[in-house]
Image 1 (cartoon, rainbow, N blue to C red):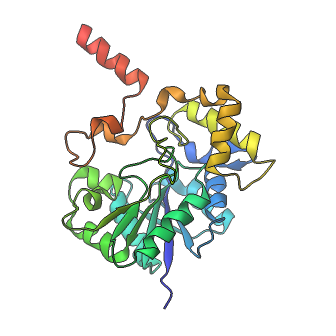
Image 2 (image 1 turned 30 degrees about the vertical axis):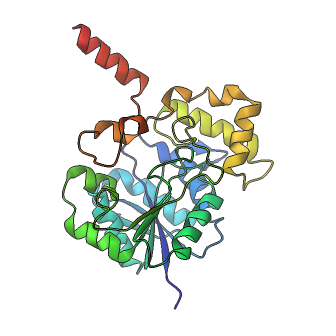
Image 3 (image 1 turned 120 degrees about the vertical axis):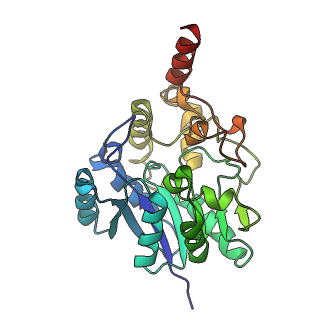
Length: 280
């Protein structure tokens, strides 16, 4: 029997740094629509679900899902683990992919590559990602887990960071779960040097420019195509280079057992704030 793969894209309008970022326009469509378009290019057969919150401000995301003819689930705003579990259960998933909506440049080839690794090792791993440790440019986040694994996390996780970020309970407990990881095939590591995700206005300018440069030539442009573009036009790389390596880990280094300080860095304005506090 073929296992049902469900890709859950978590999306919300609330964002402390860039509110409404998933609905920003990219070549005439929303950033969320461009990301869904790229996920639909994967070779594996999978259902794509948009998981948003019950908050009224996220009605716009539901309307966008309806316009794209993509199923959706509405759940807790803060408990994203519950949102993932309930969506996966509702759509009868056997295998769950967690992909956040701030990855509009995600390469469908990387999604397929990670899925192939998961299925080639079926029964060996409960959870496979390309994040522990990460080697791909930030914004190519792929996390794959069995439904049983997600259910166990849902039943047992309790720390706020585990509920907000969905999977830390899994990859922080290697004695409970069997965890696998996919790395850049040639041994390169772009995780701290290249940023393809969106959290700041500069990220949007970067993503908008990449789409403008590559999409008209080939709408299925790859991660390598982006790297080649940045080598040719380093001014594009510089648009958001100041935020390379900035991720959510930086707020939880004291709580995470499997994440080290060299896997994250503070945003420039956070460093300035700390300097001001120390001088006060």
